[in-house]
Length: 399
Image (cartoon, rainbow, N blue to C red; front, side, top):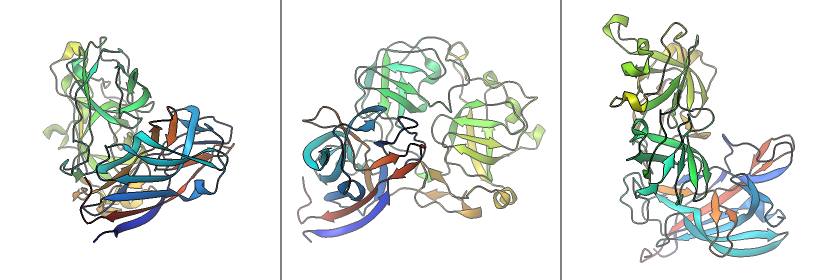
């Protein structure tokens, strides 16, 4: 059993949703995190960045979170017993000089949507104190501890003065280390500000999503348009042709979208997927009442929702968009494609999250992680690294 290889494979670093950190110039920056599927019982994992092994690197020449101070990792090692997000890394520090360190974040994290595997993240992280949040459509939450929070993380707030954002899962759109993070992205802000400045409270990292696809989502905005655009608080993961119904409270307006006997229990059809957080529907909302996010003064209130209910096969077949459920450019595990893309499936699996890097234990500036890096041309065209991995088992299973 000792040294048995459980799986091996390769991938190309993912740049979906990312932009050149220094537009108009040739630069290297972090990639999106990558999840790989590994059978139960993995005890060690080794990752090789095939592209960067053959590339000279200037010290601190790569971008991480918009700042050009990162080195590029080339080889990574994880063994059972290491803390989530960590790992050993060899990296190019200057030219062909190779150095080594331990990543304190952005390394390896066991993925188990049940939260039961030793060493995997809990489904809901520990409560972390916040001091305030701003009264804008993308609230900035102040905190002295942003450990584990990166762009794309999902957080849940509680016990703040902004009761209209409590308990809702929001994607993180920006992070200032150990100072603050920003809820939502530039493409899916709230329809309006919460209504008051938030006071002290807590946030928790949400480390999982519903096991079954497709999923119910909270709606943060709907435009008034011939084909209304719907924005969700986290990635919707829908496809063109998917049929959905809305449940919008009276305080949010646009209740004309709700499915009622008066409109013969109307469903809407997704016309286009704009990005991970936005899609358009086949309903003309120009004459509807304006959509708003419930404000603090309107609490208690339910929150606007969108629920998948099937598929319009004709629309799906006519759509020019791929009928493949994706997130950050990758197909969602175990989902079907084509006219069956709306089918309910269990997306759970065991695997490993390969992070996009973070600070080293010795080197206090970032090192790009095992998910690889993106090379941007002066014309802002991205090219992802080619990365290989091998995972194995030991006789006694590690720590």
